Amino acid sequence: GLLIVAIVAAIAVGAVAEHKVVTLKTGQRLTGEVTKTKDGYEIKTPRGTVVVAASQVLRIDKAVVPADELKRRLDRIDQSNAEALFGVANWAWEKKLLAESLDLLNKVLKLKPDHENAALLKRLVEIALAAQKPRPPVGPTTRVTTTMGSRIHPSKLLKMDDVYRIRLLELRGSDRVPIEFRNKVLDEFIEANRGEDKLAERRGERDFRALRPVRQALYILDHTDRSDTRFRKNILVKKDPAVMRTFRTRVWPIVQAGCASASCHGGAKTPGKFKLFNAPMADDRVAYTNFYILQAWTKSSRAMIDRDEPAQSRLLQSGLPDEIATRAASHSKKPLQPPVFRSTRDRKFRLIEKWIKSLRQPLLRPGYRVNYALPGLGKPKPAPDTGPLK
Image 1 (cartoon, one colour):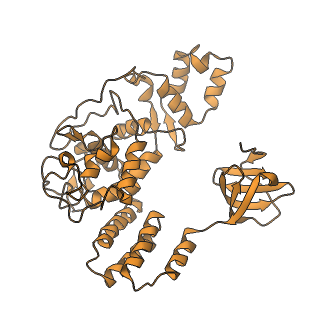
Image 2: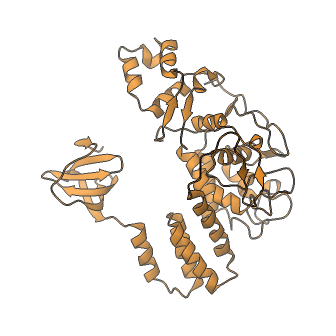
Image 3: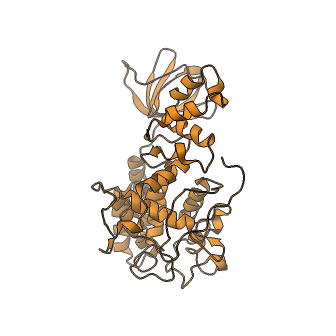
C-alpha cells in the first residue's frame, strides 16, 4: 500500500511548486502542487500535503486544466460543423464549464436552429447556472416564486426539520459537511451508552469525542433504533451531503427540463396527479420537497425512484423513447418530445441511474420520518419494515 511519509496541513517550501499529477507504482494518482524534495516529493492536495518517497513514484505528468483542454478540443475541430461543436459543448457541460458550454450551444443553434439536443442541453445549462446564483435566506413562512411567476405557499413545502432528517439519512463517511449537535446530544448519547461497543473501551469516550462530526453522527445512527428520535432529532446536517448536492446540480436540471417543465408536471395545471415545484433549487425547502416527492411517488406498483432496480425507475423510463421504455413505467399521457434520453446508454440516463444507486438502500421504516402529503395524492405508503430497527 501507499507509504505516506507524512501528512501535514501546510508546508513552507523553498522550491517552486507546479500543478501536476503524480502516479504512484500502486496505481494511485495524486493531483496538486508538486515540489521536489531531497528524498521525494511533496504534493499539496485539497485535503492536505502528502509526502512520498521518490521510489514510490511511477511518473509525474502536467495536470490538464479543463479550460486548457477545452481550448485544445476546439482547436481540433471544424467550428463551422454544428455536430462537432455540440460534442465539445457537451464535454464542457460534463466538466461543469457551464458558461463556456452555454456560449458554444448558442453557436450550435445559430448554425443549426433545429438542433434538438443542443436546445435541450442549453436548457439544462441555463437551469444549472441559475441554481448557482446566491439567493437571500428564507424563513419558514417565506413564500417561494416559481419560474412561471406564481407563488408557493410554505405549507406546500417541507420544513427545515424535514430537510435535516433527509440529510442525516443520506450522510456518508466521506462527506465533509458542518453538523450542529443540539441540546448536548453527544453528552446524552455517551451517558446512555456507557459500557457499550466503543464506549466500553478504556479510551472509548475520548476516541468518540475525537471523531469528525460526520463520523460521530454516523456512529449514533448505527447504534440507535431507527424509530428512536431522542438523539437523531438533535443532529442537524447543515449542508448537502454529496448525494443531495448531485441531485441539485446534476439530476434536477435534467428533470426540470423534462417532466418538471412548465408544460408537464411543473406547470400550474399538471397532467394527472403527479406534481413537482418548478422553482429555484437554491431554496432548501424546494430542493428537498422535489426530492421527497420523487422518492415517495409510486403508481401501479412502479416507483418514480426504484432503489431495488434503478434502471426501471419511472423517472428514467418515462424519459425514454416510447418504443424502448418499459410500458408500465413509460410516460403516462404522451411521450416527451424530444425524449429526455436517447437510450439506456445515454449519459444523462446513466448519471441519474448512478445517482439512484448512491441513495440509502434499503430505506426501511420509518424512512426519512417526513410527514408530508404529496401534491394530488396525499401521504405516501410507509417504507418497508424489514430487519432490525437499526
